[in-house]
View: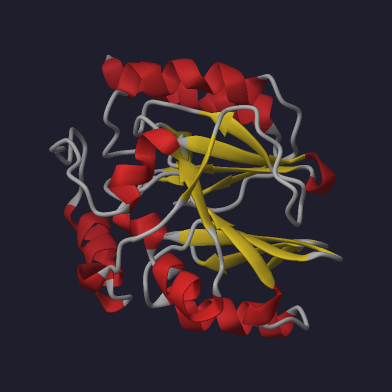
Length: 242
């Protein structure tokens, strides 16, 4: 799905990855689920590209529904995979804190999410055996000229990936625009977050940049700007705390 020239989505509102494209090739941000590999190839073909044009994968964090096809591209195509150092172990299949569905979970959205994840190979994720690490503030010499923004909270090494060239920022699970456990639509805190208060604090870093497109790992792309997205997430967090 083309969002704007040079910016495409793989997947759907349940689980999504993004492509940043320029004359150097493609940067893939997040790798969804293993079954999204076929959708990646189709999306590249629609853009007149192939998997050989992929220069790198950047993971916003190391959870299984973002690691997806990353190891496959690393092994088969030699594509380097970048992740924040604090999430490198998680991306390699290391232990993560236990979590719960939390308040407000509804049966149908939960069933839909789990069924979709299983259908896309979520139970057989191949974790990374090798990664390259990134740090907060780093600008990578890759398609889209991505800048790394540290967003700890959902996980210790959660990041956002900002492309000023494309007026877009991929936020992973720093926020959601469709809550996979409640079905609620609109910017809100993401579920399964390690440290919810820290995640809310990290939103200040997102609000400080000026990007029209806010692209979550779960939910529809948001083109109302970073400031408004952050405002609505904070509003949703306050409402759920009452």
